[in-house]
Length: 279
Ligand code: SF4
Image (cartoon, rainbow, N blue to C red; front, side):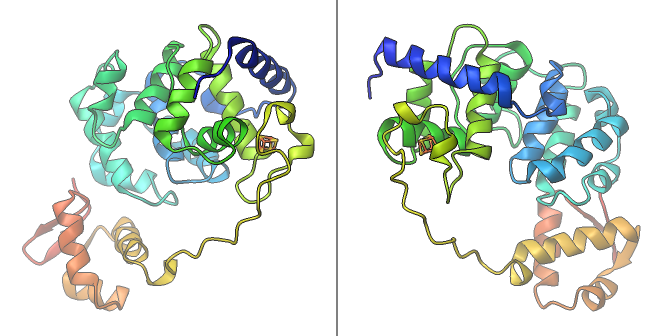
């Protein structure tokens, strides 16, 4: 979809004014340190802002630089990740630090090749740490740009194509933060607050979003993810356990298979009968 220059300028101006009044004050927005930005983006991939806030501060206090993280045992990194879930993300950050203990790659393409870093995260780190004027889209950006310009939520590819036409040459970090904040606080997934929206006049979906039924998720209590999380949590508490002790403590028939999977992923180690977090 082609966006006329005047329409793009109007949308940018309205959003910019709203952001000046309504920006969320988040600690990772006060730094240009690419490592700190990467930590925040990785944490935010699958965890709510309210849970990331204390974890981000504590993690950077413990591992303030890539070099510090590279020197740490993975077991300590996994302990510091407690409460965030999806432990592969901690493993990937640790792998990145071991690959690049001095500095992260200086290009988006280089970042994109890092373990656990996709196109969105590479773009966000380039933008928020170096101010690069590049297009990218997370869930909030897809929702806001899609609803406003297409009349529906956009796919990532569609949202990036829209963002390429809109992203300013300067202030690209503020532009993306504003889109994210609008999606997180006004253009909500189920109940958009169109009456409070600064770009309502530009929006094709204004007042028309049908309230979707809540999505049914696989019951967390019975999912593999839940059991994996319990295994890692137990290993955080007890340095070394046998498989039998682990089976007894977890009480789930999937324990053996999930221990094998976690070992394959480098999230635990086995030595004889002893299981522990990776050293
Ligand atoms: S007018 Fe409503 S649907 Fe459109 S961007 Fe704003 S909150 Fe979202």
